[in-house]
Length: 138
Image (cartoon, rainbow, N blue to C red; front, top):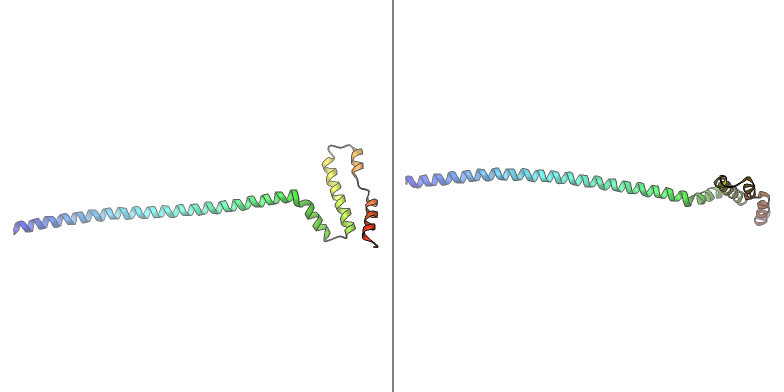
């Protein structure tokens, strides 16, 4: 009986030792899982930050492109709409002709002589006569 008690005691000691080793290994694995979860959360936050930055940059670029496009295409349209709301058709037409002529003169002033510039000017009296014919009695 002494021998069987001793065998049982040794077996119990081995089980306890094995259990303690498994607990240590389990603790290490649990810590590793927590580290990986923290890393995963950090990576997800970085992805969200990059996504937000990308979205903001896309919006900024789109806005800039829209502004550039409006500079090329909307300049005349905006002037027409702005002036149309404030002036009569005769004045509107004269102002648009004058503005466009001034822009053309500014652009061509470096390349043309004085004689060419004078031929580019609009005869406002002729324009007024033409408009008065379209506008009826005023």
